[in-house]
Length: 313
Figure (cartoon, rainbow, N blue to C red):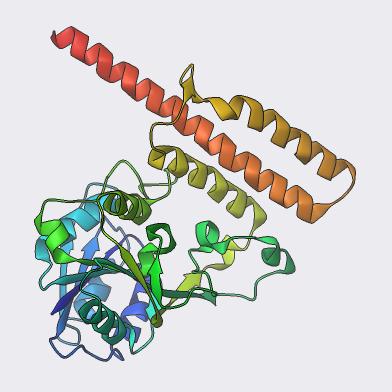
């Protein structure tokens, strides 16, 4: 069998609609179960989960410590079967979703990581400027529509639609709670960090285009300020996931050059009234800014740890 695992926090309304869509899922032949971890919700999430008892193979539990990865690690204690399918509380699955993931996992025993297609489900029609976004992956967690079935880099597998063989977690692997959603300010990359770590250990990823979910894009996310704030969180996550970055005074060396250059591009785009160019320049600047902020935080963490070690010594 397989286990579907998701974490939720204060999204009772959309969670109800998502679980309604689960009622239409075609069950894999060996069966499945759904584990939902409530990460300290203060809305009607508990009532919503209770309303689906008996209608879905659902187990729910609570993780009060704020952080999506804390919740996912907690949920792994209830996982059963040989495959864990991860998704989000705002991802609507197509009926064949689990059947397709199950089929690919059975057909490709040399692969341990699986990702499926993620389409947008817009709450309201997107404005024209959304088409300026070159890569909707880090912005709206939408998969690349050009991907075909076959081996892929792990970075192309996204959290709302991914599966991992259970034996990896049986070996003690867990999500890193220092990254991913935990309040308003955080470094992005909850599942990506895990996938990259597993890829470095030799685990390979397979893309399953017929395993489809639709990611709900809220109206508030169709705002340029929201998108540009997202760029900062994405930059923070990129620094956290970087392997041995070259630092100068605690900062990645390239930022000393790239941040001023990107600021000049912003000024030039504004001067010549080029809104699309300005948007791209501001996105790139904010990614770099996020990297700088996370580098500073990481530097402080290291100094604090060193001071603690010295005091204990």
